[in-house]
Every structure is written in structure tokens, then in C-alpha cells.
Length: 265
Image (cartoon, rainbow, N blue to C red):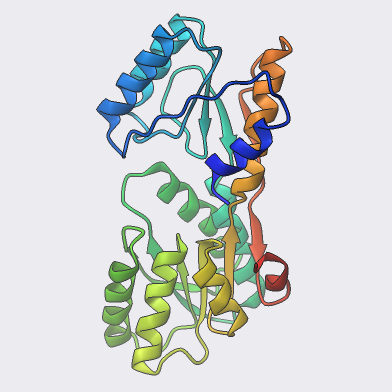
């Protein structure tokens, strides 16, 4: 279930809440215009999934000046006063790191597929993994860390190059499932999957199926349903006159072969 659909379901509990939806189609200028329009309409709160971490700040600040509370859903912003509802990307990397710290053999060699360079969630996921695994397991060698831009085809291409460059490695950790699935495809094509653990982030249906098949070791689930419900809780608090919290977190969840069945539909 998407965050939007989860929020729609949660809002049904309060018939006094009217929701108006717009879609910026990944255009930050359009998103800023939509925020302006909502301010003009004198809405009681604005919920936004920021198209751009930095670019949305003027819109948030304009809402602040107009006294309209802002909630960012799933993605943070670089500035302005707002409530963040979502999961900490550092924790996604930390959960990957904790898993690998326990599962990797002694003197393991690993590879890391980064998200898009410069995006805060790419940086945070890598840092979480580094702190939980590489700093705790000095025997583990990071052979290479390259970007796959959160894309399956790019993750596959980077992994194909690694297969040519490194005769042996024990794991590929990817900052999302799309890159993890690309790595899986490359390893299977080359006959190199045996003995290689793969970890991704998002809990996609394809990743869950790969875990069930014994081809991927782990994915990290971002609970969209929980985020939608948490957003509604913030709205209800504002409606009751409570101060807006700085953040309302919904924990990431580690999925492995041990618990994958409960996440599959």
C-alpha cells in the first residue's frame, strides 16, 4: 500500500477532515506553486512529499510565514519548520550493517552499491551501514563502493564490472532493492551467485520473492501503511490544538528468510 492510499484509509476515521490532492509529477516548480495555492486556500495543514530536498524549502518557509503547519511525508527537507513523518534512512543502513556484521565470514570481502550521489538518503544509508558493520568488523574489506543511482540496470552494469574485476567476494549491499535485483541478475548470469549474500532496501515484491527463493539474503521494509497512519495522527493532534512535533518516526524493519512469509501477500 502506498503512503497516499494508507493516509486515505486512515482519514476515513474522521469525517471532519477534508483532503485535497495534487501531484507535482517530480517538478519542484509545480510543487512550490501547489503549496502557494494551498496557502491561498487557507488550508489548515499541508502534507508534502518533497520533490527536492533543498528546492522545497521556500515553499515550507512561505507556509511557516502564513501560519500553516507543514508535514513532509517520507522525505525530509533542508530547512523551514515542518514535521517529518517517515523512517530514518540511517537506520536502513544500520539494519543492513547489523545483519552483515553477524552473517559475514571472517575476513570477508564486500561491495556496496550507493544511491544517487548527493542525495541525503544515499549518504545516510551508507553511513548507517559503515557504522554498524565496517567499524564493528575491521576484518571485513570493502573492495569497492560505486553508485547505481537507485536503478536496476545500473546496479546490474556495476556488478558485471565487479565480477570481472574481483575473483571472489562475499556480499553486495545495495542502498535499494532495484540495485540489489540488478546485482542478482548479473550474478546469476555469470554463475557467481553461490556464496554471495545480497541486501537491499524497500521490501519490494520482487525482493521478497527473491528472499523466498533463497537468492537475496535481506531487504529493509519501509512501512508506507504505518507512515500514512502516522501522518493522520499528526493531523488529528493539530486539530486538537496540540503543538506540531518535529518528527514522528516509523521504524524500518529487516526482512530475511526467517520472516519473509509475513510480508508476502
